[in-house]
Length: 339
Image: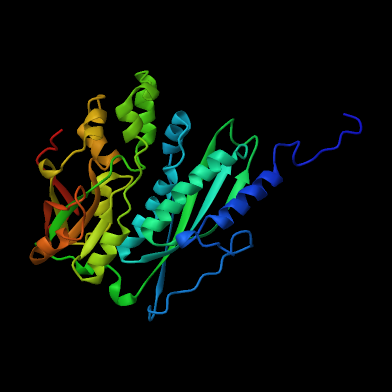
């Protein structure tokens, strides 16, 4: 050990590689691939659109959970960035906020430019769909904290909304209809359970074309549709169906004294959830862990039902699953889900 010189590089941190990635980001972010001059600075400066008169800031942060382990297993990283953006911006729009800026945080055991560029590609796609700008972020090389090839990602989104366009609980009334907007698949919740199934049953996902496709299918981003509906004053409330499933997420927007009566038999269950259910998972576990095919819920006046439907493309058309009634329990399930 005599005369040994210790360096950051020898301890496992390659600043040169990190600088290369920062340079890559600065040239490949922002709308229409415009160079983002904020990247590489200490903080990001963004303008508030002028047409907002008295904007309120809405912020959200999230990750994609252990879905990253499926990406690692399949060595495919170009879609989880879309998931990352979706998990943040889909929460913002519940209150009517337009996503404005997005920042990411990537922590990894050792910088791998191919992997990082692939993740960034997905983040850029997600930001374009959500019509927001990737304005900065952080990449941390952390040897010893993560084992070989392991990493994690997190996102932070900021949106703005005019006070008159905030979607409030008080807008929801008795006899409003509850609509289900289809999910694109599992989205980004419940993957620890899925991975446990794969492990315990020794299921080789690499050899299963159905699971390979479904388990990395990116989370649907609902920004355009929800903001257009809110602009037209066609929704009274909405809920992003993430961790906790339908019951835990809908009850967050239901006012006291009202109840969301949901007919489970009306839910159009996607094939991937039927596969999970067959792995000896009971109904309650399915409903509290997964979206089961319902990615987003809308609460609307009956008179607006047909107009709402026109804002969604085929495959994501909303359909009726319930009604708002009086009641002390905020969510009530009727009938059984049909698998």
